View 1 (cartoon, rainbow, N blue to C red):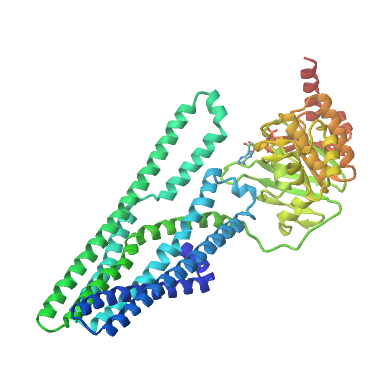
View 2: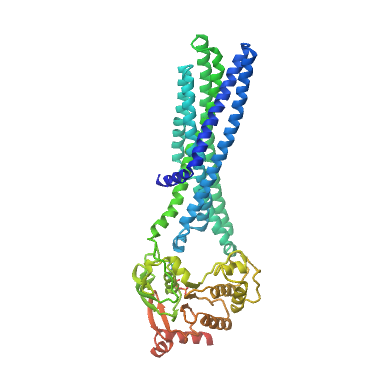
Length: 571
Ligand SMILES: Nc1ncnc2c1ncn2[C@@H]1O[C@H](COP(=O)(O)OP(=O)(O)OP(=O)(O)O)[C@@H](O)[C@H]1O
C-alpha cells in the first residue's frame, strides 16, 4: 500500500487538474443524465399535446443541455488527459531521479531488459491509476448518489432499485473480481518484464548463442515466455470482459425493474405517468458510469504491482542513499587505503584481504598479478563503485564515506577494461568525456590516440561494434586525453594492442599524466621501470610492494613473474 501512497501523492501533485477534471466529469455526467431524463419527459409531454410554447421551451432546454454536456465532456477530457500525461511525466522523471544516483554496482543487480521494462511498462501502467482507479469511483459515487436522491422525490422503490444496482455494480461485482484477480499470481506486466529481460539477453548474446548452436533452444524458451505473457493477457482480458458483462446484466435488470415498478406505480396512481419515461431514461444513462467499476480491481492490482516493482528499485537507492556530502574538489590527489577488506554483495568469500596502499600525490603505481587476484576490484573501490567491508580510505586526508561519488568521478580519469560506446559519431563519444572540448582538442586527442584515420563525423555503432578491440581502447584513451582528471586509473587499457603500439601509447599516457596520481593495472610487466611503486597481488592479497629495482633485487614474486614472462616471450 505504501507504494501506491507514493503514486497517490504524485497524482495529488496535479491537484488543480485532478479536481477540475473530477468536477467537470461529475457536471458533464449529471447534465447528460438530465438530458436523457428531460428527453423522456418531453416525449411523454408531447403525447399530451401541450401548448406549442411549452414544447418550444423544453426543446430549447434540451439543446442547451446537449451543448453543455458536449462542452463539459470536452473540458473534462482535456483536464483529465492533461493530468494523466503530467502524472506520467512526473512518474517517469521521478523514477529516473531514483535510478540516476544509484551506483553502477546496484544497477548491475538488475537485468537490463527487466529494468527497461520497468522504466517503460510499469511506469506506463501507473498512468492508469488516475484514469482507471482514482477517477471512476469518484464519478460513480457522486452521480449515483445524485440520481438516487432525485428519483426518491418520484418513487422510493425506483430510488431503492437504483441503490441496489449501485451496491452490486459498485461494490459486490468489483469485490468479486478483485478476489478473482487476487488469485492470479502473476500480472501481465510482470510477465512482460520477464520476457523483456530474456529478450534483451537473447539479443546481447545472439552471436555466441549462434556459434554454440544454442540459439534455437533459447528461442524456444523465449517463445514459451511469450506464450505465458499472452496467456496472462488473455486471462486478464476475459476477467475484464466478465466484469463488463456482469455490470451490463445488472444494469439491464435494474432498468427493467425500474420500468416494471414505474408502470405499476403509474397504474396504481402513486406516480404521475408523465415521469415514467424520464425515470427509465435516467436509469439507462446512470449505469453507464458503473461500467468502469468492473475493470477497477484489475487496474488497481496492476497499478499496485507496478508501484511495488518500481519501489523495489527505488529502495536500493534508499539503502545506498547517504547524507549529502560536503562538496569535494582538488588539484591533486593522494589516496590512502588502510587495511581494506572487501566482499562483493551476495558473495560469501572476501575478494580483497587487508589491502593497505598509498597512492601519493603525483605518484605512479602499477598493480600486477594473475587473473582474478583482485586488481580491478581495487580500482572499483577507488572509484567508489563499492564500499569496503572494513578498513578505511581517505582522499587528501578526507574519509571516502564523506565524499560524494560524483566528486570522485569528476576527479578520476578512468580507462577501464570495458568501455561503453554509444551509437552516434566519434564526436558524440568524445564529447562524453568533456562536453566543452573544441573540434581542435578532439582532433588532437584522436591523433594522440593514433586514431587519425577516423574523422569526428565517422559513425560509431552501438557498443562500438564497428571498431576493433584495439581501436575501442584507443578511443577510450582519446576520451581520457580530453578529461582533466587528477586521478588516472587504467585497467588493462592496452591489452588488445600490439606491443609496439602499446609502448608508444603508454609513453603518451605517462607524458599526459605527468605530475598526476596514476594507477596502471597490467598483466604485462614490461615498461614498469618508471613506476614509483609496483604492487603484486595474489588471491586478493598484496604479496609484494616496492620500486622496480627493489623488487628485482629482492628476487621475490615480481622477479619470478618477470622470469616467466621473459621465458614465454622468448618461446
Ligand atoms: N561484480 C562482481 N561480483 C562478484 N564477484 C566478482 C565481481 N567482479 C569480480 N568478481 C570476483 O572477484 C575476484 C577478483 O576479480 P577482479 O576482476 O578484481 O580480478 P583481476 O585481478 O582484475 O582479474 P583480471 O586480470 O582477469 O581482470 C574474481 O574472483 C571475480 O570472480
